[in-house]
Length: 480
Image 1 (cartoon, rainbow, N blue to C red):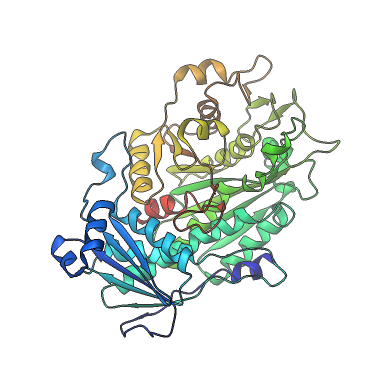
Image 2 (image 1 turned 135 degrees about the vertical axis):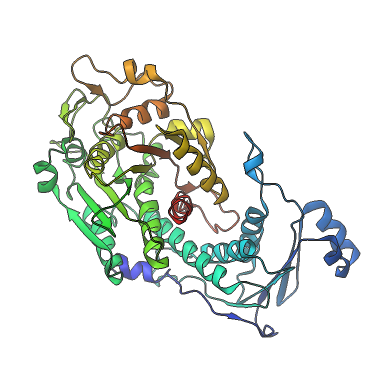
């Protein structure tokens, strides 16, 4: 089955909200959201006490389950520097997703205490993400379909959020595909087919000959040993983009000649998670008609091993002319990104470049799997990305870029740069390396170092797998 046909088993059109009562014969999940204490008076005493204490309670019978959520807490992360708190929207996402995955309802009934754009969006996003049900099987599993009944949901907000949830699931789907299915050739073909429905969008696939002609020696070298060679996929809606997004797309990472241990190689199908976030965000922008002139660059390669693999000690020429010594072939993501960032910098209309990548294990050691590392040469851009990320439920933390890393640690004795360093501060080293490929001083640049994976079921995620991390951060950024 083609990748597009596989994706169609998971893509789901937004269900129409019905204002009639739910059918009693169907398995249903009822969500009751309370925002003031007077609304709690209708509850039985045990439930009211539990709700005030825990902020949620769940009751279930044979054919009907009910989730009560108490959302009096008005705290936001914007006034909590250094601390991420669970907002009302995040609570809905977590608790509704968990209840949905437990019940697997045919009907979801939503009762909000009052009509709210924010809460309607939270419900739409949560249910959309929770519908994802991808698994390789003799009979491919389709996404979970269900009806929605509500008199309090704002339909427009719900529908837009549902589309965003499908964009998150698109990124999850791409990350979940094994390297045997997703390689630079099939990935590029999938993207090209995906965007055919959007007439104002253009997809160009730049092959190995293009990389060679444009002296993109770093990108070319990483995929040299693979059966399917490196390529650069360009998705755009304008000939004069003012914002460029760049994504790392290593469809499988063995580590190259600096071979990874097997336990670290196990999940390396996810090493294209940054590019997957871009595909999801670009699809959401196209589907929702968000008016921003953008270009998305997917730097695709398969870091394989063969007799013609690039080697430790090699010196490679980058698109911007910099000579790069290879210290470690497993620090390959920064190489493909370097050439793509330089290529994006060449576009004179571009004022802002944001790259997203599953770049380092060091950032997970420091921040955990749910918090992205955010590096930037512009504090204004960093603050904006921090806010939209936290508001989207995708927290990030602004990281330092010390001058001495750029001035000393990334320098090579035999070339301009060396692609990896002594080991400490690995995420900072990688970001400082990427900064060398922002070719114009006037450009704003930011780098998001993400994990793109959830290790266990929880909330809207019914199983471990791709998380879609980064999609909503980018969609919120584009929307502002």
